[in-house]
Length: 227
Image (cartoon, rainbow, N blue to C red; front, top):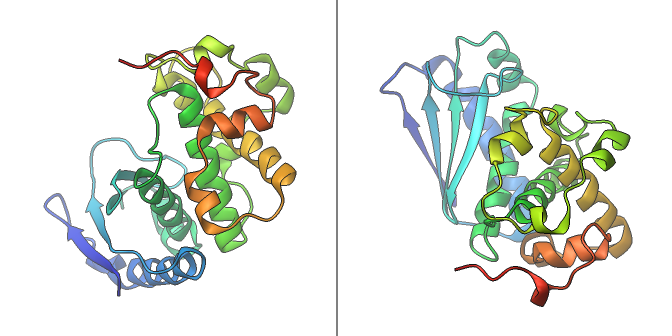
């Protein structure tokens, strides 16, 4: 196996779920490898009795580098068992693997626009690899509301944007706005481009995608210089 599984259980025992989790990780690895080939990745599965998880799933993913990601699990959450059984866990794994692959190329990004595109690409990658419908956070906001909150050019290229506000609705913006916006933006780009090979899925720069769908009518050279 190109992926190496590590159990992080200092906070609690995940043994009752080892088999189901291992199966979903193996299935995710095979599905991803069929698209991009085998990858060497460390997969951390962590018991978490405190700290954030997606309440509707009882778990949450975090990508750290081109070769490592973590799925945090809270078995006390009433939705966790279903997530391990119904494929939600596998979808989270594939989502985080796309982030890892993108880290090896253009990266997740420091700006709002780059984050929107990275999350949209990861979501559409899951759809492509597994043939699954959008997640809750990818269909959380009505299209009219998305247009109402479409960021201006300066905000799109801002490196000081509030990630929690745009993606988790911690202040005034709708919860999961950034995820839904990214899913829709990348979906439009895919429809315009047509067939995509593996490297296009992973390495297309955010500004190219945003310009192609006319979200931001500004070329790469016009972006604020990062210092």
